[in-house]
Length: 346
Ligand SMILES: [Zn+2]
Image 1 (tube, rainbow, N blue to C red):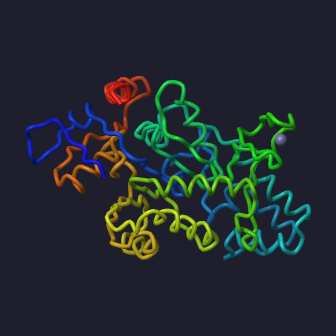
Image 2: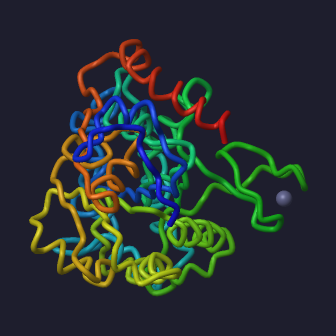
């Protein structure tokens, strides 16, 4: 890899001023979000207090309980995705299946982003356009945060997988925001499917395939990877294998460091993600604000490169958690200005 120097006399440390003023042209930081990320980002729920469910409490939170009770379905101690699969295999076109799907869609579509800065805002603003955030979550928040900032701040790419904000025209292989029309056939695009029966969750769907191609290519070219609140459940076995293959597609990743942000204990996580981390170069934090991204906002790859490749200490400067949007934007300005200069010089 090309050696990226910093213009200093100090041999042991790269200061925060240097990190801020001298962004480097580095490969992407890829961030993958699971349900745990949305739960951590919206601890008080959406703008009106509607809670973010996980698979464990989905039935309760989105209001599926009376629907399942009415149909005499036993859902106790059952994984929801497996339960859905069983019902689907029995009768894929039943009214019950339709009602379950619509109830979930309506719940997630109705979620509204709080007005004040959220953890997702901090995540989005702490990454650069070269970076990528992908989510497996149904909720609209990653998309909505991206929409909130994309005209004023250079933000990362966002990839949504089975999300209430996206739709597609399968025939023309076009995707766009839910509610948009296909530019080829002028038909209203079909909302992205949220639930897949586990048995046929083979990502054979054209649309899903296309999204996977994107994720795979991002992972292959990633400088580093952060997995945030994604449990890689058994029902996602295929996704997990695809990701592992892509992450190791170009190299065995023996030198790379990745990071897991998850409230679970480190030992459990290391075991779970072993296929991903051949040499255990993995950082773990339970809290986003203690992660590498939050320690080196918009310089996350530099913050990792300095100690691991240059062997120097990188002085952290935290993403400010308590600022309002106006303060946050002024705080970001020098970082963004330095990026503009770098792009000009390139
Ligand atoms: Zn079309």
